[in-house]
Image (cartoon, rainbow, N blue to C red; front, side, top):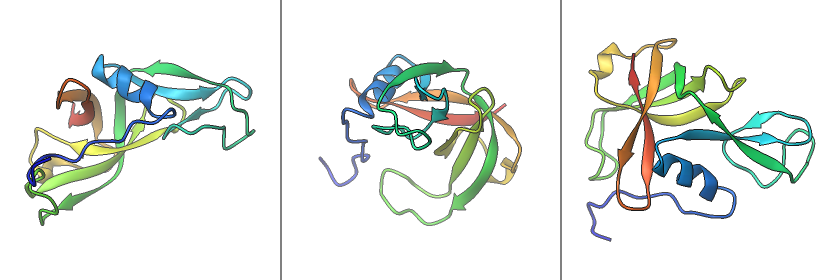
Length: 135
């Protein structure tokens, strides 16, 4: 990997279905088959009831910015500053929040509570990253 190459997620048994869905430009979260609670990030067992049974539920990709920060200093050559890192609360996923970047806007336009929608950035044949933009 070159020094400027973007760092990518590491696949494992828990995260592989999430990244496979992203590659198809679908956003999915885990749902416990025992208690029915949604969870993210993917985990091998439910943090509420300890069940090992889960399924993947499609979600709309619409949400609101729960909190955010503007990175003003580049920490990696693949991420030139400034850029916005946010915690997005999904509207149809019962409180599930994703850490992501807000793209295609001036960082000054971002605010807590702002509506956003998912878009996918195709990085390579294996990964498409879920990013969000203001609606």
